[in-house]
Figure (tube, rainbow, N blue to C red):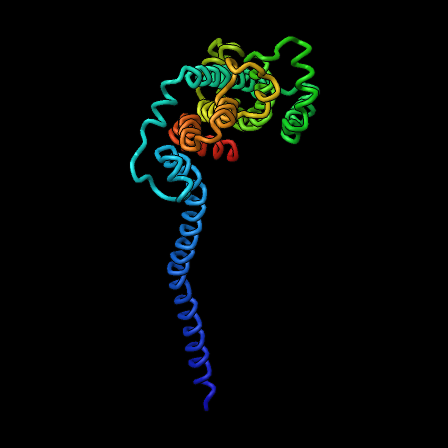
Length: 302
């Protein structure tokens, strides 16, 4: 074997190695496809596990009590619309819908307004104690309502707000502000300072810049925190349970529990009441689902 043939063989080996390296990525699309299929399959399973209880409750409202007793997981043999019409025809249900709506809307408006102003100050201005204030709001996420419910009830009672919607709205605002500020601060901090300087040159003050520019630029984050506050208030159960004593002041979660206790033997009607109670929140959440994801994504990027 001559020395001249060695470079040729070495070159052929090198070219072969390069060809092998060039052929390896060709298997990646198939691997990615199989990985995506596994991810989609797992996601479908999780979605099915999540929606199965909701579908069971809604379909159970169209069945009779005997059907539920004989076959709890079956479909309605004859659709009993009377279960839903009886609930919709009761004045108690609509009173509780009104109470939940008032509490949720008031909570959402105050949470958005107060959270936006606090986040604006924490994100745009440097002052002594800013880090401590932000850390205080962050620490608020570590204290669930179950821990503070007893002193909270004593405080609400001392200011005379028991058995009123105000006694529910004010604590809900306090507990919703930490997550609201944490989401909004990155949004407002991402606004270029040059924009504020240009507005100042045009004669726009701090308040004018806030109302004319900041509020508009923070709309995705505002929608996100507003939806989260609304849904949390609509589904709140423990706080109204401690604060509200009169059935006329009940919100829908409390009304569902009271209805289930009163009509414990009428399972189908209880399921119908439960379905109607959760449908508004489901519709509201599903309509603005993309807004929530977009708002949270913007907060993370900011």
